[in-house]
Length: 207
Image (cartoon, rainbow, N blue to C red; front, side, top):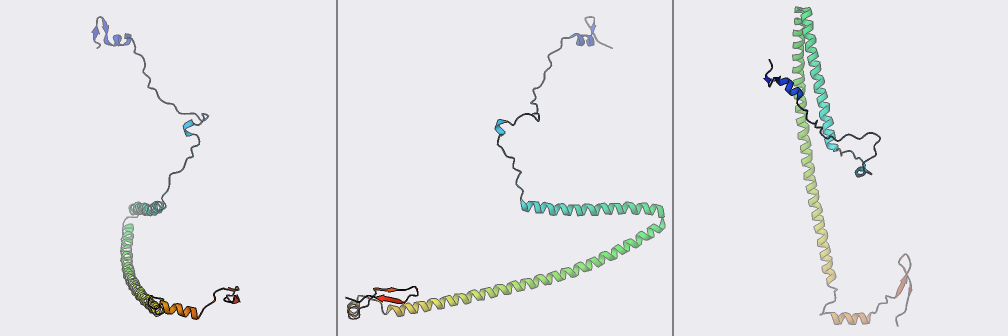
Protein backbone atom coordinates (compact mmCIF):
# COMPACT_ATOMS: atom_id res chain seq x y z
CA UNK A 1 0.00 0.00 0.00
CA UNK A 2 1.07 3.60 -0.65
CA UNK A 3 1.09 6.27 2.00
CA UNK A 4 -1.21 9.15 1.07
CA UNK A 5 -0.09 12.74 1.70
CA UNK A 6 -2.60 15.50 0.93
CA UNK A 7 -4.56 13.26 -1.39
CA UNK A 8 -1.50 12.06 -3.29
CA UNK A 9 0.60 9.01 -2.75
CA UNK A 10 4.26 9.25 -1.83
CA UNK A 11 5.24 7.72 -5.18
CA UNK A 12 3.29 10.32 -7.09
CA UNK A 13 4.84 13.12 -5.07
CA UNK A 14 8.30 11.80 -5.91
CA UNK A 15 7.50 11.59 -9.61
CA UNK A 16 6.06 15.14 -9.70
CA UNK A 17 8.92 16.68 -7.68
CA UNK A 18 11.30 18.88 -9.71
CA UNK A 19 14.44 17.10 -10.76
CA UNK A 20 17.81 18.43 -9.70
CA UNK A 21 20.55 19.14 -12.19
CA UNK A 22 22.64 16.13 -13.27
CA UNK A 23 26.14 16.39 -11.85
CA UNK A 24 28.75 15.11 -14.29
CA UNK A 25 32.28 14.59 -12.94
CA UNK A 26 34.93 16.15 -15.11
CA UNK A 27 37.13 13.40 -16.48
CA UNK A 28 40.25 14.02 -18.51
CA UNK A 29 39.88 12.22 -21.81
CA UNK A 30 42.58 10.25 -23.61
CA UNK A 31 44.45 11.59 -26.59
CA UNK A 32 43.70 10.17 -29.98
CA UNK A 33 46.37 8.69 -32.21
CA UNK A 34 46.44 11.78 -34.40
CA UNK A 35 47.09 14.25 -31.56
CA UNK A 36 50.62 15.74 -31.56
CA UNK A 37 53.16 15.08 -28.84
CA UNK A 38 52.89 17.29 -25.78
CA UNK A 39 55.43 20.10 -25.65
CA UNK A 40 56.67 18.92 -22.28
CA UNK A 41 57.53 15.53 -23.83
CA UNK A 42 59.14 16.70 -27.04
CA UNK A 43 62.61 15.28 -27.56
CA UNK A 44 62.19 12.75 -24.76
CA UNK A 45 63.74 9.37 -25.48
CA UNK A 46 62.24 6.40 -23.74
CA UNK A 47 65.01 4.41 -22.13
CA UNK A 48 64.16 0.93 -20.90
CA UNK A 49 64.77 0.35 -17.21
CA UNK A 50 68.22 -1.04 -16.43
CA UNK A 51 68.53 -4.78 -15.97
CA UNK A 52 70.90 -6.17 -13.39
CA UNK A 53 72.83 -9.07 -15.04
CA UNK A 54 73.30 -10.87 -11.72
CA UNK A 55 69.61 -10.59 -10.91
CA UNK A 56 68.71 -11.78 -14.42
CA UNK A 57 70.91 -14.89 -14.02
CA UNK A 58 69.37 -15.65 -10.62
CA UNK A 59 65.84 -15.22 -11.99
CA UNK A 60 66.59 -17.51 -14.94
CA UNK A 61 67.98 -20.18 -12.60
CA UNK A 62 64.99 -19.92 -10.29
CA UNK A 63 62.55 -20.03 -13.21
CA UNK A 64 64.29 -23.14 -14.56
CA UNK A 65 64.02 -24.76 -11.13
CA UNK A 66 60.37 -23.74 -10.96
CA UNK A 67 59.67 -25.30 -14.37
CA UNK A 68 61.41 -28.53 -13.35
CA UNK A 69 59.43 -28.72 -10.10
CA UNK A 70 56.12 -27.97 -11.80
CA UNK A 71 56.83 -30.54 -14.53
CA UNK A 72 57.65 -33.15 -11.90
CA UNK A 73 54.46 -32.35 -9.98
CA UNK A 74 52.36 -32.55 -13.15
CA UNK A 75 53.88 -35.92 -14.01
CA UNK A 76 53.34 -37.14 -10.45
CA UNK A 77 49.70 -36.06 -10.45
CA UNK A 78 49.16 -37.52 -13.91
CA UNK A 79 50.73 -40.79 -12.87
CA UNK A 80 48.56 -40.94 -9.79
CA UNK A 81 45.40 -40.27 -11.80
CA UNK A 82 46.31 -42.87 -14.38
CA UNK A 83 47.15 -45.38 -11.64
CA UNK A 84 43.81 -44.88 -9.95
CA UNK A 85 42.02 -45.23 -13.27
CA UNK A 86 43.97 -48.35 -14.09
CA UNK A 87 43.29 -49.88 -10.66
CA UNK A 88 39.60 -49.23 -11.07
CA UNK A 89 39.68 -50.95 -14.46
CA UNK A 90 42.01 -53.86 -13.69
CA UNK A 91 41.28 -54.51 -10.01
CA UNK A 92 43.63 -56.86 -8.12
CA UNK A 93 46.02 -57.19 -11.06
CA UNK A 94 46.60 -53.46 -11.00
CA UNK A 95 47.17 -53.56 -7.23
CA UNK A 96 49.81 -56.26 -7.67
CA UNK A 97 51.51 -54.31 -10.41
CA UNK A 98 51.43 -51.16 -8.27
CA UNK A 99 52.95 -53.09 -5.35
CA UNK A 100 55.79 -54.31 -7.57
CA UNK A 101 56.34 -50.83 -8.93
CA UNK A 102 56.44 -49.47 -5.38
CA UNK A 103 59.02 -52.07 -4.36
CA UNK A 104 61.05 -51.34 -7.46
CA UNK A 105 60.84 -47.63 -6.70
CA UNK A 106 62.02 -48.25 -3.13
CA UNK A 107 64.93 -50.36 -4.41
CA UNK A 108 65.88 -47.63 -6.87
CA UNK A 109 65.71 -45.03 -4.11
CA UNK A 110 68.00 -47.17 -1.93
CA UNK A 111 70.44 -47.52 -4.83
CA UNK A 112 70.24 -43.76 -5.40
CA UNK A 113 70.99 -43.11 -1.72
CA UNK A 114 74.04 -45.38 -1.90
CA UNK A 115 75.28 -43.61 -5.01
CA UNK A 116 74.76 -40.24 -3.35
CA UNK A 117 76.70 -41.44 -0.30
CA UNK A 118 79.60 -42.60 -2.48
CA UNK A 119 79.61 -39.31 -4.35
CA UNK A 120 79.57 -37.44 -1.03
CA UNK A 121 82.59 -39.39 0.21
CA UNK A 122 84.42 -38.76 -3.07
CA UNK A 123 83.55 -35.07 -2.87
CA UNK A 124 84.85 -34.87 0.72
CA UNK A 125 88.12 -36.54 -0.31
CA UNK A 126 88.47 -34.16 -3.26
CA UNK A 127 87.83 -31.14 -1.05
CA UNK A 128 90.39 -32.37 1.50
CA UNK A 129 92.93 -32.89 -1.26
CA UNK A 130 92.25 -29.41 -2.66
CA UNK A 131 92.65 -27.90 0.82
CA UNK A 132 95.95 -29.75 1.31
CA UNK A 133 97.18 -28.54 -2.09
CA UNK A 134 96.11 -24.98 -1.30
CA UNK A 135 97.87 -25.14 2.07
CA UNK A 136 101.00 -26.53 0.39
CA UNK A 137 100.92 -23.73 -2.17
CA UNK A 138 100.52 -21.19 0.64
CA UNK A 139 103.55 -22.61 2.46
CA UNK A 140 105.60 -22.63 -0.74
CA UNK A 141 104.60 -19.04 -1.45
CA UNK A 142 105.59 -18.02 2.09
CA UNK A 143 108.97 -19.77 1.70
CA UNK A 144 109.52 -18.07 -1.65
CA UNK A 145 108.66 -14.66 -0.16
CA UNK A 146 111.10 -15.32 2.69
CA UNK A 147 113.84 -16.27 0.23
CA UNK A 148 113.14 -13.15 -1.82
CA UNK A 149 113.30 -11.06 1.35
CA UNK A 150 116.62 -12.61 2.34
CA UNK A 151 117.98 -12.02 -1.17
CA UNK A 152 116.81 -8.39 -0.98
CA UNK A 153 118.52 -7.98 2.40
CA UNK A 154 121.75 -9.49 1.05
CA UNK A 155 121.63 -7.17 -1.95
CA UNK A 156 121.15 -4.13 0.28
CA UNK A 157 123.96 -5.25 2.59
CA UNK A 158 126.19 -5.60 -0.46
CA UNK A 159 125.24 -2.10 -1.60
CA UNK A 160 125.95 -0.73 1.89
CA UNK A 161 129.38 -2.36 1.95
CA UNK A 162 130.08 -0.97 -1.51
CA UNK A 163 129.05 2.52 -0.36
CA UNK A 164 131.23 2.20 2.71
CA UNK A 165 134.14 1.22 0.49
CA UNK A 166 133.47 4.11 -1.84
CA UNK A 167 133.12 6.47 1.12
CA UNK A 168 136.82 6.02 1.81
CA UNK A 169 137.49 8.07 -1.35
CA UNK A 170 135.02 10.82 -0.52
CA UNK A 171 136.36 14.38 -0.14
CA UNK A 172 136.14 15.55 3.47
CA UNK A 173 137.46 18.53 5.37
CA UNK A 174 140.40 16.42 6.58
CA UNK A 175 141.64 15.43 3.07
CA UNK A 176 140.44 18.48 1.15
CA UNK A 177 143.94 19.99 0.72
CA UNK A 178 145.41 16.65 -0.27
CA UNK A 179 142.72 16.08 -2.93
CA UNK A 180 143.24 19.57 -4.34
CA UNK A 181 146.97 18.95 -4.69
CA UNK A 182 146.32 15.56 -6.35
CA UNK A 183 143.88 17.17 -8.81
CA UNK A 184 146.43 19.85 -9.68
CA UNK A 185 149.22 17.31 -10.11
CA UNK A 186 147.05 15.00 -12.27
CA UNK A 187 144.77 17.18 -14.40
CA UNK A 188 142.04 15.45 -16.44
CA UNK A 189 140.63 16.72 -19.68
CA UNK A 190 136.87 16.27 -19.97
CA UNK A 191 136.58 18.34 -23.13
CA UNK A 192 136.17 15.68 -25.80
CA UNK A 193 133.64 14.44 -28.35
CA UNK A 194 132.22 10.93 -28.71
CA UNK A 195 130.48 9.07 -31.53
CA UNK A 196 127.25 7.03 -31.43
CA UNK A 197 129.08 4.03 -30.00
CA UNK A 198 130.49 6.11 -27.14
CA UNK A 199 134.11 6.13 -28.33
CA UNK A 200 136.19 9.30 -28.01
CA UNK A 201 136.77 10.76 -31.49
CA UNK A 202 138.21 14.15 -30.63
CA UNK A 203 139.87 15.64 -27.56
CA UNK A 204 141.16 19.15 -27.05
CA UNK A 205 144.61 19.82 -25.58
CA UNK A 206 144.75 21.37 -22.13
CA UNK A 207 146.09 24.87 -22.13
